[in-house]
Image: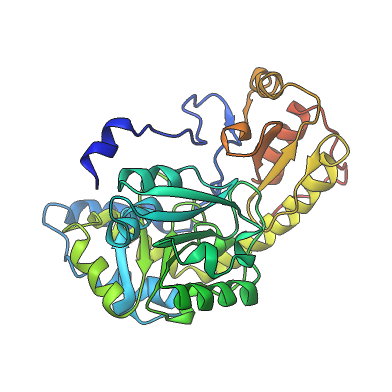
Length: 350
């Protein structure tokens, strides 16, 4: 990390509502957690009187099975953002240039800056068309799939083509798959290319954002650099044990995907009469409020007990909010707070 850059960098806004009296639709986390988490956490807390095994064999094995790679390629990290930082720390030097998508997760540009490097911004949906003239000057390129805040996932063939072009250009490709678990699309980890680093987060899909568990996946010398650079005891015992447990809950993942797909479509149909709604493969929807004042829309929903995300903080967006997709009852409260009528079929999301 570049010392001079720290003095000029700033923190960036995120979703997540601290007021527990509000229903939080600003953060895209699962409202449910897998069965057995409490018992696993309690047992792990008792074992926390000793240092964890820094090799994390059980966690690596569970993570590897989840994304389809060899356990040795998994690098445990305290959350997906820690995997992103680790990848950038080992790929960027002061003065380097990085290709960063927009509108997308604001931490990419911040982390690039903290390394003393410069972001070269490109629209996230144009990233897959860039050629050697754009890639060759860049030490690193970032892909977010599904993209946050738009929600659309990268086409696997288009992503693999970009992987090939990055290889030809000598550019490291960082693929952030924080929300890919909500889809059935394959992880870029299955490509097993030495210039590709995948960052994964457990906390979105399994509804445990405060646990801080994630991992990176890399190959060859890149994997060795990440493993050497990661902090010792990079996961606490509760995070490692609960994380491994969650990653093995295939029925929970399947049920979550089905529920989110169903509820996302129901929300989209209800919202598109009042807002411009972007197509999404993720547990959130990006909504254009048009001529309405974004801050007033946010204030009105808060007055009804619901917090939504101000998406104007994302580069390139000036009339947007982002809303999470949760369980049916909560989603109905969101629609009511936005002044939108949902369906009345009386169904459930069970």
